[in-house]
Amino acid sequence: MAEFDSADDLINFINFEKLKEQKMKLLSMIEDWESSPDQAKKETAKEVMGIVHLVDHIQDLAVDVLGKDEKEVFNLAEEKNSELIQMWLEAEEENRKHTKEGDDKCRELKVKFSKEFDKLSDEDKKYVKGYLDDLGA
Image 1 (cartoon, helix red, strand yellow):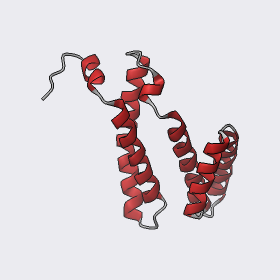
Image 2 (spheres, one colour):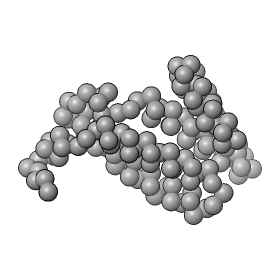
Image 3 (tube, one colour):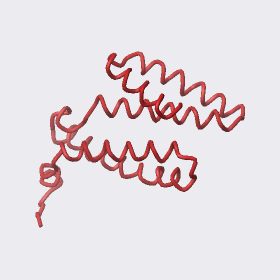
Image 4 (tube, helix red, strand yellow):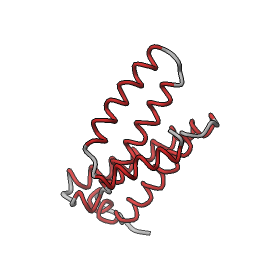
């Protein structure tokens, strides 16, 4: 078992390539669970998102404090795509509430989605659109 004298030692021990893969798999699982009609899966998705936030904080620490290269630590394009997909799914969830507040939140999220979507490369736009189409969103 590795011993660490400091947070720097711990961060430097992390295999960021593997961590990025694991984070993307978690995000994919969360997306699947959130689009499920099963309420228990939706609740699980919320809980597991906490692990993703922990990974985000570790990545931020590695870049902001320890000076690691952002490209080494983050998978920026895939994470951005995942965030946009999540935003669209949240908008759809708000829309299903059939309330004024839900409609307003849905509209707000979809406007934000559109602005961010327009910034994507053509390849990323195709990925996001295809993913949402596959979900029937």
